[in-house]
Length: 404
Length: 233
View 1 (spheres, rainbow over the protein chains, first blue to last red):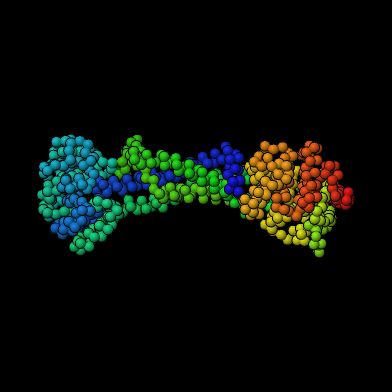
View 2: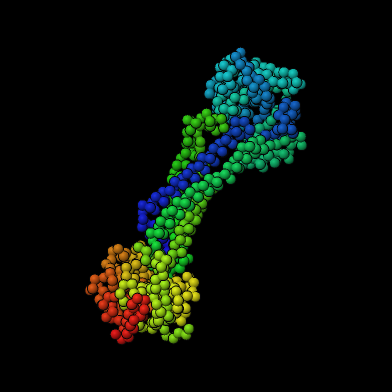
């Protein structure tokens, strides 16, 4: 019956209850949208990094990760191939020879990471081929090179133009190769674009005097959730002079950023909850003051303090629950379609590209987001009603009955 | 202090002092009285004589500055708020001048409410509330809210609420003050009937001659003192 009274008291002042429920709804929507977009952004940053370059697992010679130079590249790739052949049904892989060097045209030059790849292998692992905006991806021709539109602009070259790449050979001398630009790519990460050029693996080996060598094997499990287990298996099968790293070890800052965000969101939750608590205190206090006379009568007919507190907290809980349910419904109605179509933020493309996010953000509504809102908001409304409830039970029955 | 076992209320040399802007005001000065089972007593007196103050003390809504109020032999001054609420719930029914029904509840729910506070199960309290409303002649108004009822009808609901927990005592503070004389007479007849037939004890505060005329015992208050106490008026 107390819950019936609480509910009817909410309906008693519809406008006030509506405004309060509206503010709770706005809080829930802000919370869910912020969380969903932030998680989406973080996951996109991670998957973009994995998708364009890092992959889920990399195999190197021990020491390459700390000192990524040619002398630390894998000389004998047979054990790695043998280890990977065990997992041919669960993984795909590509091999790369990577070196820091210089790319020059008649007009300009730029420091870049020259990556030698096997195009058909690389297509199965990374997404650069999807970002070709002009020309083609690498073919089998040994003098092909693909560069980004940003690098092309800097070098003032276009499709079909010649560029020269140079890098230190394995013995210390300088190796150079003249290549013809066959394709221009433009990814969502301007930093990556400006620092990467791709040539065929054999061309790289020839230029660097590194026949048969590979800097890294990039391995992608068919099911990314198996990254850790597959990396453990690979570690056990490979010789001890090889290192197997997952993306968590290769991209520690990004992973840490995501973990940090998981904690930081609770600060945002706290801010929303505190704002809500003050709103509830204000509204419920007003409601309690208006009903002083009624509380006096309730006390006179024998209603205990405990029941008065329960009634007020129940009212607050109902307000919170209604606001949360409606707010969640609206949030999901916004988020779910956007999680498929993405939210186009082309207006901020420059800044988004600088941090490795595409111009579209795909919000991710996780169960934890919904659960957090569903728990935190009603609890906050109940907390907000504690002070007004305490005020109500401090009333003296005689004085409260006299109140008009 | 020894109290007679049959006494529902004993007011023993009670003094109540209010502070009016820092100035102490004696609302009651040395009141002594008892309420016995089956009483139909009226505390009468002019405005400001202390009627409502005395009724509030008997109803455990307030505590005396000096002296003691005993309900069923228990000194209310020693009770906590929770214990006092429990005494009011189980032993005392209130009928107020302005009816004071819960505006969000129907007549039936208003009567059920006090029984709910006692923990009586829903089916039993509904059955009893409907029976009470029928007995008081307002059964057809069971589902009406207070704002859909006349003053007299609301006061009947208030009486039903007051007696729903079978209290030892019903305190009625100027119950007819807001009613026209016909309605007031009917209401008083109803309360007399409850007193005669169901042996419900009533203590009124009133200066309405219609109420005073029906009193079995009349206590006249003046300036916070009982100046006359007539039995079998």
